[in-house]
Amino acid sequence: MRCPFCREDNDRVIDSRLVEDGFHIRRRRECLNCRRRYSTYERPEAITIKVVKKDGRREQFSSDKIRRGVERACGKRPVSGEQIDQLVAAVVGHVYAESDSEIESRTLGELVMKHLRQLDQVAFVRFASVYREFKDVTDFVHELQPILEDRESGSPRTGH
Image: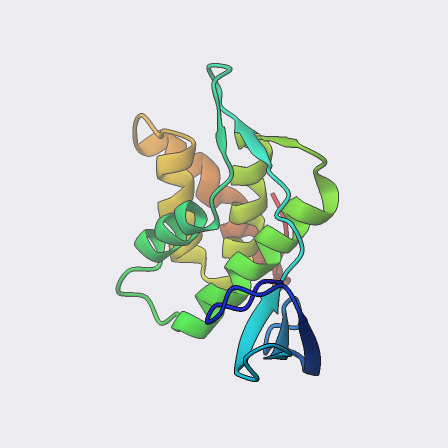
């Protein structure tokens, strides 16, 4: 590592610590030439995952895009930012754990809906209406039917 002050490539590591998320390491270094100290951060190389869209196009997976869709669906609902963070983290974790390089947008949407259904049923229906491109009220009724049946039976159903 070159010193950012004198540009010499001769340093020693004084201290190494995990950063809050546990996926980064902060190293405190001292240049053996100029004796100044500086920090470097080490992180694993990001895996690039592509989302295969319905029309066959591929675009880079984005947790921000997942977050925006979930936030829109949860608008004016009693869902905290922390709950949204947890949902997004669960979806992202699943994507990276289960996908080598690609995931179909359909699979991704179903995964988000599974988590939203457990979090907030209104947000779930909002997200589903956009994701599944509801054409009329019968599409809403079709999506709500299992939820209503679960309420009548008294058992919340997970998944779709």
